[in-house]
Length: 304
Length: 262
Ligand SMILES: Nc1ncnc2c1ncn2[C@@H]1O[C@H](COP(=O)(O)OP(=O)(O)O)[C@@H](O)[C@H]1O
Ligand SMILES: [Mg+2]
Image 1 (cartoon, rainbow over the protein chains, first blue to last red):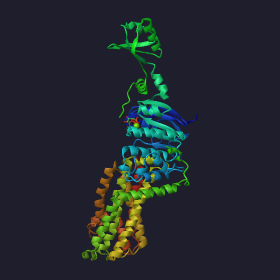
Image 2 (image 1 turned 90 degrees about the vertical axis):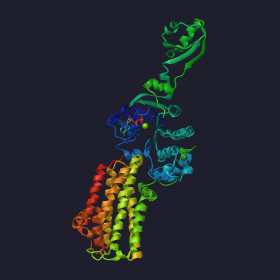
Image 3 (image 1 turned 180 degrees about the horizontal axis):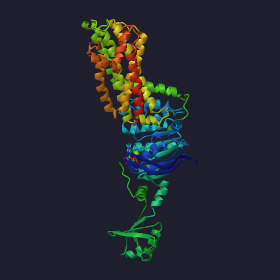
Image 4 (image 1 turned 90 degrees about the horizontal axis):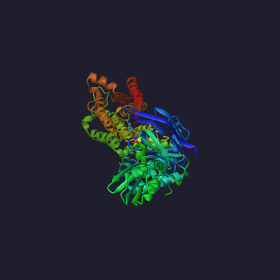
């Protein structure tokens, strides 16, 4: 599949602070590509550079083969952007905004259908300032899509939406992708990334920590498997810590917690069987994407 | 949901000309909804015009004004009042607000770009001012028997230059003010001294020599001078027209040079 977005060694600093240290990534046609990372990681700055809204200090960016700064006219026709900070005039009504923005593009989508699809039809005559946060967000998504873009960048798409609205928005995004639009989704919600994204770039401190599928990222983090059980008979630590597959052992009350690599579970159960110990309440912890993130970045995603 | 199977519109592709036109219409509608322009820029001077029109004392000729009465002079003063409110208060407040709230930034992601929003706002205020001026002239003429400027071409040229100068000042205020609040404050603070030099409180002809000279170098004072000459039937002299043109060009150049989009 051809690459729709190519970013090489992007670097961007603001007056007093480096926002993006070194970001490289490639987005393939038709995929939902997630950019995941904690607040302040440099996600917004990166996508604003991709959209040509900021001038990078270093690095190369191509979107549909275009230079985002030089080929603005062509790029803006192919790229829909939903900005984290971008509003409309207070007194502009929903339908007016959609109709106006549709007129900016050579081959716009049907704005009325978009308005219905995003559940904004009954707000058609409502002024922007009177919309709820979720409604503003949905209008913002609609405006990003009204030009029938080939690529859509959505920054913090569902921040501020309630869970119901969030699920509906996810469905919408899946439909958008089914229509052939490549999507770059900036998020700090794990669940969102796991549900929607084909591939993910983990960004932390202005750097790409890892790029993989959600499952692949979890896989990487599962190097450190955790096995927890209560031995039916007293168990000497050295029986397990001596195993090459095991990297650590801790006890919590009657529970033994063993950490180790992928094969640790086989090795541990074999030792227990040989010693006629039954592992009661056995639990093997499945690394989640969240844990993968913590593992890979050494940090934590703060959910707002 | 079948949101995205909505491509392929029936309508022909929108030409960018139509986008510009829609934008101007939208900005005009927003300006009217915003009420600052209509209320302070049109309603207020219109009411003042009507009130002053019924005061008999104002029908006395003003000394050194070539036979024009106080009321005659108030018609161009109120036309300038309208221009000043629209260009120096309504325009900068709206545009600085757009910048502050990311409206311009969002426009930057579309093929139209933010500069077109600026132009649309300028066009919208220009259109409102044009309608207001025609309205004032009609009310003063039909309601109170004030003659139209005796040199119409000179008047129209002066009016165009005055609106260009004031809109440029408004653009400069927008460019230099950090936020919406500051833009409103600067516009309002400048408004009163500038209106003074247009003769809102004292006719320019009755000001001390020094103030008259200063007046002629302010945009509203120069506008008033040109209007007055057109009213008396002359083509306005070069000095006020050049002063207005200089403000228009100078402020526009500085505004473009220093404009911050975010
Ligand atoms: N306009 C700006 N001026 C100065 N610093 C900024 C600006 N925008 C963002 N930053 C800083 O750059 C860093 C990255 O910000 P951002 O790209 O918004 O991160 P994210 O979207 O991942 O939360 C943050 O530390 C932020 O404070
Ligand atoms: Mg962000």
